[in-house]
Image (cartoon, rainbow, N blue to C red; front, side):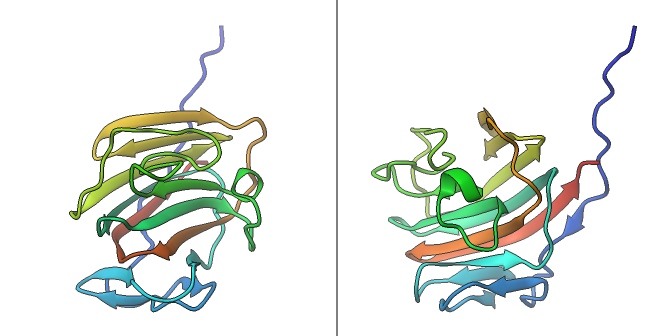
Length: 176
């Protein structure tokens, strides 16, 4: 009898040094900057700040702070250009309850309600493994979504859509 062994995970690696945007590229015109140890944006066009490296199967942890009414998100396994969130990435949303996919939801796949808005630091623990996306918000597991077709390796993107957003303590552990 064969037993399935758990996937081997690598070491945690920081994707943000708390001081610079090294390792990240802006995909548009927003005022991405580093302030008080966090990546921030509050003005400019809707765009993403993306990692310079692609990832396929991994655990990603980060903290975010969104002012009330802010619309933002974390894009996983994203193509260079996202034309359709249902095909080109997994977008874990940061948005008000009035949004079609409020905070904790995976845009165009899974809607989560009742997480509310907080102008305070919150923590996402996100996992992508062979097309299964797990979303944990502030220690509470919200979603385990199985994609019909797993996404290939892609970039991680931080979104500036509407309102002030900040991200910090961003780290990743690849799953082999």
